[in-house]
Every structure is written in C-alpha cells, then in structure tokens.
Image 1: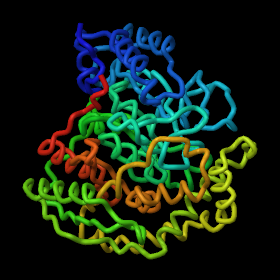
Image 2: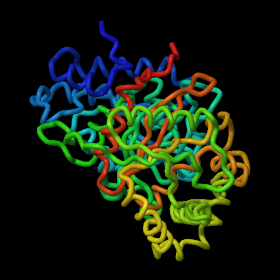
Image 3: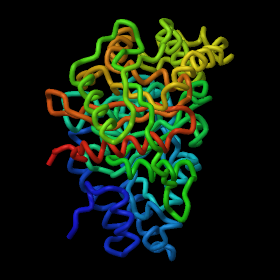
Length: 454
C-alpha cells in the first residue's frame, strides 16, 4: 500500500483523480502520521479525525472526482490556522479569552479549499491573537520538526510545523508581520504573502489595518502556486495561470537589516549569496543594492502591529490574556487613531517606490538567525518577547506595511542542519514573477521536503 503522507498536494490530487488512491485512504494516512508525530511537534490545537474521514468519503463520492477543472485539490488533506473559521469548529486564536463556540460557516478561504476538493484535518497552534513570531500558549507549543528544541516560528507556526513534518502536504496561514514567511523559513517551506487584495483577508477585526494576508504553506513551488490560485479564485480549467518566461529581471540583493542594530548571521547571508548565484546563472541581472529603509521603520512597525492587536483584543476579557498580549494591546490603544489614517504606510510606500522602479525584485535573507528555543514564551514579559522577535525576524515587516507581495524559499542550512531561507519581494501584481524566481532557485538548489522524524 502506498503511504501518501509526505507526498505533494499535486501528486495526491492527481492520484485521486486518476483513481490510484481514494480520498479516505489519503486522509487516513495523514491522520495516522499526525497521531504518531504530533506529540513531539505540537502542530495541532484540534484534529478533526472523524469529521475529516467523513468529508473524505463525500469527496470520493463526487461525480466530478476525476475532473481537474472542478477538483484541483481532490482528496488533499489541509491544516488551517486557528484564527480562521472552520464550520463546526471553534476558533480559539491561541487564547483562553476567546469563546469555545463552533463556527457556523467556513472562512471564505477555507470554503475555497473545500470547493477544490481539499479535506480539513485540523486547526493549528498559534501564539495568542497571532501576535508574536513564536507559536506557543495555553493550547500548545509548535516546534520546528527539523530542530525540535527550537520554535517553529509564528504566528502560523503550527501550520508550518504540520507541513514540515509531513502531517499535511499544504496548510493555510496568514501574515501580518511575517507570520507566513517566518515559520516557513524556519521549517524549510515555500510560502507567499500575496499582495493586498489578491486573496480575501477577513482576519480578525480589520486585518491589522490592511497588513494581514492569507496564504499557502507548502513544500514545493508547484504546490504553493496551486494553492495560491485556489485561494485567489484564479484557476483556468483547474490549473493555476503560468507566467511565460519573464526575461531578465533586475534583482537587488541586500544583506542589510531593515531594523537598525540587528546583525545578520553568516548562514543567512550565505543563503542570499547562493540564491543570487542561482539567479545569475538563470540569466537575471543581480547586483548589491539596499532599499532606503527609514530610520523610523521600527517605530512605524511597532505602532501598526500593536494597534492591530489592540483592536482584536477589544471585546476580550483582558484578565484571561497572557501578560505579553495585554501589554502589546495596551500599548497599541494609543496608536489606533493615528494608524487608521494610513499616513505611515503611505509614507513608506512612497519612500520605497523609486527603489522598485530601478529593481524588479528584492532578494534578502528571510531571517537574521535561527528561531528562539521552544518554550513558554507566553509566560514571559512583553519586552523579552519583542527583543527576541526583532533580533531574528527584521526582514518581513516592511512588506506588510506596504502591502506588496513577498515570499520565502529554502536555501542552505544552519549549523544544526535545520533549513535556511531567502526572501523575494516584488511590486504589486508580481506574485507570478516571484514564483518563477523561486522555481529557479528550487530547481537548481533542491531541498528535502519534510523533516526526518521517523
């Protein structure tokens, strides 16, 4: 019998459509892997074993099962970040302060995945209200399957850990300050934070003033492209649109941290140099160039980040929130009115637009260093969390503030053997070009898809 756990979403969907596998046996194989491994990884807050098997049977009984145009994700198990509604399940958002009430309807992104034939096997762990770049709290701790002593990252850490451990081939997450790209970089995955408006958001109360976007976590560029097309409702006959060769792109390679005072480790800078070499061999024009990040970027990011959290926390019992969350929300309350004007985001776009008029794509490290040790960060103080987050993930926040697309792809390794990664950033509408570049890097620098946990 074929073990479908560890296979890509594209491989699984093709096998199901061609009757080489049934959705039930595919889902059962992944549920068995979750049961075997998640005690060590901590990816899931809730596993929907019985419901997932029943829904897999429903997919298998569909008359259009073999139709690529109708079911591009036929029988594919998917995990959903626990801040997006899944019908019949509560949405706890990593908190004890949120109600344990089943959702009446799916979030639009979940509904699109299900309509494409995917089966939701569970909801994944996040830090409380998805605030921080490590995923732990009252519902569990998500560890990096490549290095379980370390955090999987956050806030989509559970989703990333589930994919990296082979417990699902793809997962749904979202990104308000790097929350897709940080855990993807830690866990050796491919992800893309789409630009503003490409995929429906609807994350919390106001999407952190437009900074948050939903997106895919996957082991390959092909799966990332496919899942993004499903989420964006951008499929033609079941296939995502494929961009023709874009010609030679002007790629700016930058090693400079956007946040003053943050140093970047050698493996992370080496990853950029390696990716730059791959892109030059592919015919692209690569040169060293640093974006003109303003000295005030850290303050701008903090005010928007904390203001977004304060809005999400408004209706919750603050006595039930972790102290780091309470402090973050309290800080943000004084910034809500200023942030809502959009002046800070517009100013950053205006400052960076001339740079992107001269360069098509920016290549940077995805992270500055490996993630912090896994542990009870939710029990620690606000300042300690802020310093730990800023020290290892300074490269992601600018692109949430601008609303421009950004993605990560694995390149190189850390001394521990865990993966390293680079970030690709483009102008609005450049998602296809970023995926093309990521595909070049993936093809010439292949990476083992899932962590060796067995």
